[in-house]
Image (cartoon, rainbow over all chains, first blue to last red; front, side):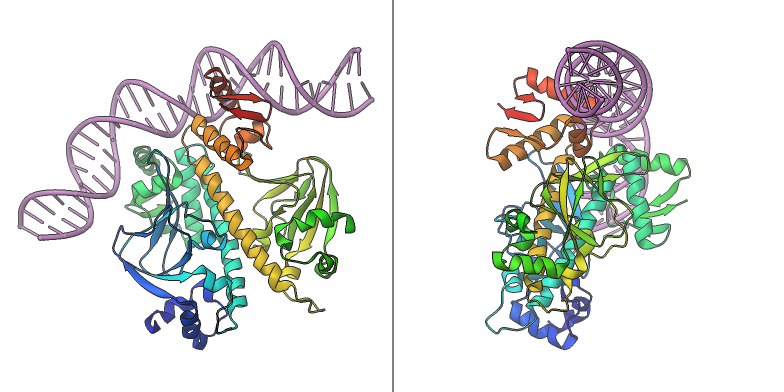
Length: 219
Length: 219
DNA sequence: TCCGTTTTGTTGAAAATTCAACAGAATTGT
DNA sequence: ACAATTCTGTTGAATTTTCAACAAAACGGA
């Protein structure tokens, strides 16, 4: 576990927890690390929502696939980020989403019960963990809100520009890369891929932005 | 405060808290009750996100209004429900949303700092409140996810049917009322109102459902 | 009850999206 | 370096949405 300490220290779930206690806590929580190849499923829809995931390396996408097979990308979690926590915390029976590794990834899995309920050793960190989980869930709610702000727009152009503006703000620069290829971006914005490609071309011709693959510059 | 106890006992923020302690806690939290007439603003976009709201009577809508004045309804909170907690918990400076009373409503306001941080009296309920807040935020995340599942659909018809199916499931009946008029429903589904009206008419003619105002029956 | 306001349903035209198909570019694995 | 696969941009047709305008219905207050 030692080699993961650096990244775990940046994980919101463990904020305010002294480095020297981290290993103990991980042991107490029964944390384990699993590796996934690119495109492999970390959590499958319908399976029990027991575990919280933490991205140690690589990245995962949280996707929802409807009755007709249409894919919707809900979020993307990179190094140090927690995912699937809401389902475990809310004690839903079956996961309504799927988590897929986007690259070869190492994922730390923690049984959420171990976080929420005191362990046999009565280690005193549960309160802090619950507080951290609460903070994390609050910021996830706000993330979803931003996504809704984007997808609430009615046209592909508006959705795209709203999304890119948010990314530029996040990167604090007019030049930034996004974690999506064209199909992914379309599935995140809830629009047609070919229409999205066309819109990006159009915006480039109009001189609004420059795009090379997943790197964008707003002009 | 006494007259609100019945409804507060059903509020997720106070679950697992003994009735006899509730009044003490409310006092410790500095809870106060404010009345709002129909259509009045409970929280305005841009104002500080300090308070958590609890609906004691009436109901509120959480709405987002974009640069062009397009309204998007994010959620609706009825009696006993908590709202705006995510912004206070995540310590965002300014509220990105507006909360509006839908009917004459009594709202309990609690400064979120008082929930998250121990008070002078060191009353021992903060841990339980934080735990409750965490549970509440987890279920709010899942609520948002369902909304995304609805609005991710590409056509008015699909959005409407997905929404109505969820409502039927929630009501455990094919007959149910929704908390929206036509314009509100359109602003929730992110579609055009007139198109929505047309689609409802069409579905009635096809014998898929019956609608009288905001009461629906799925056939 | 009457009047003014709000809500709802309808319509047709304009605009935008989706869909399917394809070809070139880029990437991956061997 | 090569072949196979995946990704991307383009196109045109069909579908759907949006927009604006209007009239009937429902509602609320005096």
